[in-house]
Image 1 (cartoon, rainbow, N blue to C red):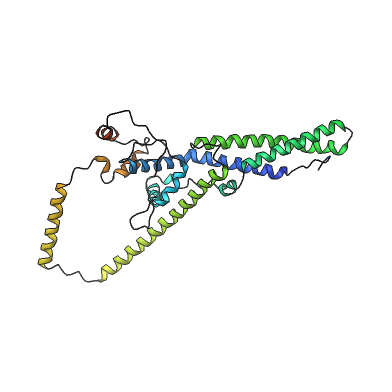
Image 2: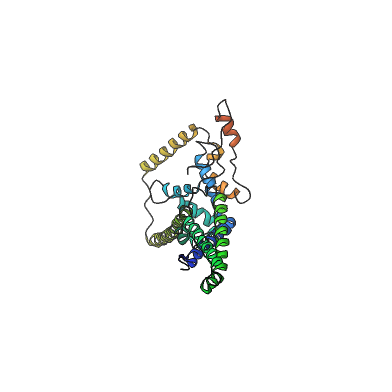
Length: 305
């Protein structure tokens, strides 16, 4: 307190600014290097699954990452995120550690940037009042020492707060969000929640691999000690052959399947992503086949995974 004016906590405000800056720097640097490619793969999966309903999308909202946990296999044991983790591990092992440098997401999510900036403005007003009071009392040693000690700190706080605000707006806009309507708590929490889910999925996939390997090893051990299974009676073998023949006849009557819907098409998409951005091979054919007469279709800016 000086001259009746209350001085806040510059150290606390400075820590908030520095925390936001450090987190934004790590997010931007790391995501530009690795996670953007990861998000591109997510977009390719979304386009593949939505291809029969709507045109290709060129981006998606970060909130759509939560949908990776909502889409589950028929047995409800695996999510789309589990499958993506497997694809990343097999096709893009260099992307598996994209989250390794993002250590401060939880802490940054707890910082209210608006509150920090408001505190900086309050401190600035308090210092300005103190400066005006010192003009009237230039012989006051206490005021002189106070201004000498705190003016440089205030200058650094102003610079840091401006840098933090500009960095936040830049990163949020980079990911297609609106910094005016997206608070740091919302933005950082999206990444924090997704990374926690991704790490958990990695652990579960690894555990499933170990369980599968153990089961296969046990089956091999039992198989070596068991006598060969008896051959099926002639009647059962005839029934099996009849069933196979019936299935073959039904398959011959099935309509032709377009190339993009065949087995393994999604693996081809992932492989092609290594060399160029995702583009559906049959976009032209599908558009010509399904588009009704009228104005051109509008491309949506996001997808629903």
